[in-house]
Image (cartoon, rainbow, N blue to C red; front, side, top):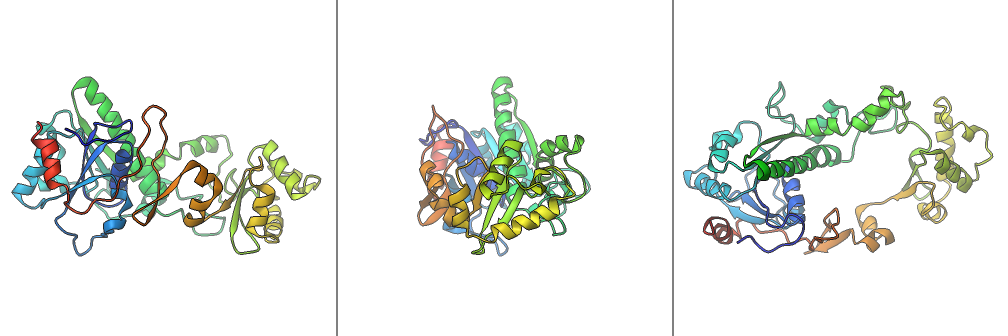
Length: 371
């Protein structure tokens, strides 16, 4: 039997080969949605492994078995589990799974309906396929990092968000779930080649459509969302920050009214990029004249398109976040609750982070002996 759970993916069996970054995040997402995710862990952490132990939020809700994949017995154990799996997730460099004897050909022979999800940075083929890299490298090459700073400053995106999570884990999740749907209709599994490079480039399509209209250009600070005074963050008197994003004319008018600038002729030139730098400087001075809390009192909840910039502890305590129950604390670890939300198959509270190898016997009972 599959372990009891809740959510739209209840009954789905996912076998995850331990790794770092987007593949484990994908596994966590699937577990959050109700899948039975079994993490194939090492017997112990290697000397260069980042072992977060009980703080590894990306492993919450999974079950952990510990095997030695460098032994025949370890490989045989994984292949026995493959026979019962709907999805296999792995984030090794190209060729590693094949060298272990766990490549897609071997696994699909054991289970023709298996969806073999592969997560890499550069992809399974191409000149860079075997090179090391991280989030910032992949999104730098894909074009997704280009607008991620103020003009004249080195681009710097939120760590891990655009590449590892957005272009990586999320695309892997969509890919393997699409593969499962097809396998259930046709009886045939397949390999899903998810690369952070591909996914982060695909995420640019909204911007590329705007580029075709001339609203985005290759010169920093001259595009619709990377240069205007009405779409950026500002420092406040207390050293904190706020954001404004008054893109549409009606929202821009509300911002100007709230700031006492509705009758200022310079601010009427909303889309004139020649005056953006001067208007930015005026708003820099204005927003630096009050604290973040004072600006929140004036602007938050209005249609000026405003929000404060909060650290995660502040975000967890914000009234709107609290009302929606977005953050939680499990075993002393602050973490975000599962998303999105489902009306017919509500999601359970996230389950705790497993200890390495604690579920060997239970998983073998559920996945192998029940066959």
